[in-house]
Amino acid sequence: MKRTDVKKQKSMTGMHIRRSLFAFPYIVWMAVFILSPMLLILYYAFTSEGGATLENIVQAANWDNMRVLLDSVRFALYTTVLCLLLGYPIAYLLSRMKKTTAALLSVFFIVPMWMNFLLRTYAWKVLLGAFTKILYTEAAVLLGMVYNFLPFMILPIYTTLIKLDKSYIEAAADLGANPATTFLRVVLPLSMSGIISGVTMVFIPSTTTFAISQLLGGGKTMLYGDLIYMKFITEQSWNAGSALSIILLVFVLLSMTFMKKAERKTSDEGGGRLW
Image 1 (cartoon, rainbow, N blue to C red):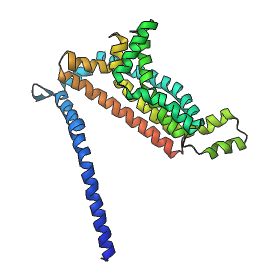
Image 2: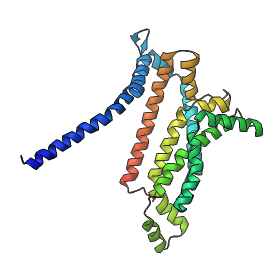
Image 3: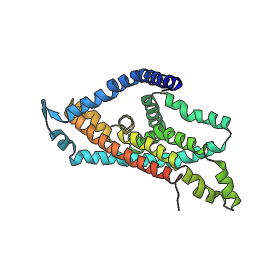
Image 4: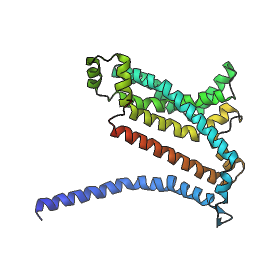
């Protein structure tokens, strides 16, 4: 082996060791704060009085609990659709502005995210209680969910739109396409990856939320996250709460798998095609 090859191999080995050292704190973090809680939930979900059992899962999968999960999915779908209908036009308008103007306006969507989630929801509780009569209704819960998750729809779509190759739009105009046709046949399909990312980032947390329904729904709107919270905190039943959490985890993983396949299909088709 040549001396240069030996030096190159030693250099690559040294880089690999340094990367492993830098990754070590992250591995420890994941083990302590992600893997350990998951193992604890799995343990409580499949045990009862120290013995292995599937009874917790069977009881958690009863119709009353599944109906609450379906209600959570319904709210998540409403929230996702509303965030998409509101977020896409906002992201599109921002992408057409000058970068300095768009950056300035983006602050109005980003700054609220720096505040505590509960604090933002409490603010809506005060506003709705003082100026409207929709507090402690499903409409109030939906409003709180859309407000809290809307930035997660806007930002990925905006990031995708500003990266679009403007030559496609110019080519469509040269071929005689009007603005509406250009948007439907060029801009929208090419922004599908951002839409799918936004849908994923809104739908998943909307399904698992519980604080918004408690504060703005006043306990009248029961979501799946509320059910898990009640089992763990109110009833102190870790076995039942863990079993419910496992069911929710399976649903979330299936949803993410579906979204991932849709995103991969869109990428393979070069951004997606409507026709």
